[in-house]
Structure formats: structure tokens, C-alpha cells
Image (cartoon, rainbow, N blue to C red; front, top):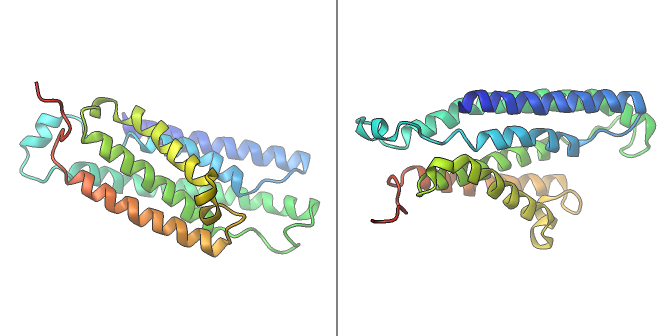
Length: 209
């Protein structure tokens, strides 16, 4: 079931971050936005299974457009992901005083910017949903989530580490404002791609026998 998978992924990442925060508190080691990104990856992986439409013959027989079912599930998953993001950022925020006490950077009294992390996680979700929606309209729809997870992770890693894109989306060298704008643009582009994929016909790329 995709919902149990999504909840399990969100809980697994949150528990992992809570354990990391406890270790950081005990050992006085930094806990920063990078740990939040890692902790959010299980939720991203689980999200890849949400756009999959079960019972295709039943969905095709209904008088509603084909994109209503996957779009509705993605919208229902959004509050769960938002709650997970809030919980993980809250856990990380409690570890910031440890970081500020033990290290001189960032300066005392200043916490790392949160909005670039939120924009980045939103962009990751948009990329994953777009890949899953495209796969769901292909002949590999039955294994759409299993295909979407490695493809999405590869796209995220490529954007993060490729020299051409890392200077726009990664901090540093990108500024917090520049990274936020870049990830918002990524979100908009892949949201449009998701809409186009969901409105496509079933099995557009099915091999004709």
C-alpha cells in the first residue's frame, strides 16, 4: 500500500534525524541542513509510489478524467510531507544551539537559513512525482515506483554535484536566495511536466502486439 509506505518512509527519516540530533547533543558535533536532506530521502523514495494508479480498468471506466486519481493522491500526500518537513526542521533547530556553542561559524545567535532547505525538498518532491507520473504512463507502469526512485535520486545527485548546476542549486557556491530561486524554478518546471504526464493517455508507449 502506498500510504503505509509513505508513512513508514516519513517516520524512518524523522527517527533517524532524532537519533542524529541526540548523538550531536551528546558528542557536541554539528547537525546542519545536510542531515535534514538525508533524513528526507526515505520520504522522497516513498513518494515515488503515490502517483501509481491501481485498478486501471476501473479508473478507465469512470466518467472522470484519468488524471484525477493520481493528482488527488499527490495532493493528499502533500500534508504528510509538509508535516514531516516541519518535524525534521524542528528537530534540527533544537540542535542548532549545540552547533553555535561548539563552533564559531555561523556566528552566535544566527541559525542557518531554512527557506533554501524547504525549497530544495519541495523541488526533490516535484522531480520524484514527475518521474513517477511519466513512468506510470509507459509500459513500465507496473514497476513505476521501483523505476522512479533510482531515476529521481540520479537526477537529484546530478543536479547537486554536476559543475554546471551545482553553482545554482548547492550551497555554497550558491547563495541562500539564489538556491531558493533555482529550486522554485525546478519545482515549477517539473510540476508542469507532471501535469502534462498525468493528462496523457494510458500506456502511451505500450508496445503494439
